[in-house]
Amino acid sequence: LSDFIVHPSLATKDVTMARTWYATRLGLEPFLTSPSLLAYQIEASIFTVFETPAAGTARNTVAVWRVRDLRADVARLAARGVPFEELDFGADGHTVAGIMATADPEGSPVLNAWFRDGDGNWIGMVEQVDHPGEPAVGLGIGPSLAAADLSRARSWYADKLGLEPTRVYENDELVYRIGRTHFTIYATPSAGTAKNTVAVWRVADVRSEVAALRARGVRFEDYDVGGIRTVDGIYAAPDGGELAAWFVDSEGNVIGLAEDPEGAIAPQSPRPAPNG
Figure: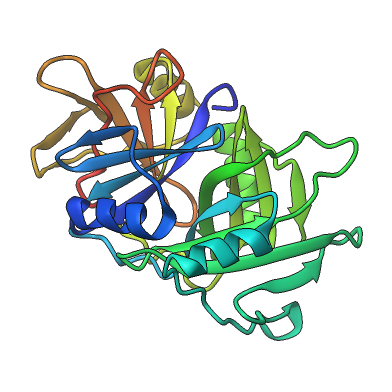
């Protein structure tokens, strides 16, 4: 999976309402639309918003947006009506006027802020430096996956997906670089609350990736609901133009694979899992 991009998958109860919110509040317009899905680009990354009755179930941050100048972006978005959250993490810090200023283990400054979209999806923003000698994580938006046990999650992603973090914040967060994209896994008691797909890998060949991951012990889900029926873990669109599959990680996060031979989101995008 390290050869392909990964992106957040955000749930909405009403895709038309979501499109209006993202345009009005964030100034974003989708580069791809369908009756139940929107796709947006942030720097070299993308995210999708899809319609599902499971919208609003996640009680954790579902995406992290890495930015160059967080204070300027917070001011810009606040002026567009985005309310930033005031949070207190105890010894780990708290927000002041929507921004939390801390430092990483090397002493480099880190700025964080959080807001919720129109469906209640928690989205984090972070400004931080990459460290010499480490692969750059890069700007853009990436999935934020919740973990009840960070050590268990790290072992699962290494054993089952063959992925190792580029940076480890002990007892707090794992950061992974995947091609030009990134994702994070962080410790939270809210892990497992999201009942919808939270991340999608866009791969060249779904069937070969499913076979390779099964050989590592990944179990793929079978669905027959909402017009989606998988056969041996794989959904094939009736017109033959779309393949997708879903698995659940050690922390209960639903993750999708979507066939995208060109390496960027295709006009016929994969549907969310039936449970979201």
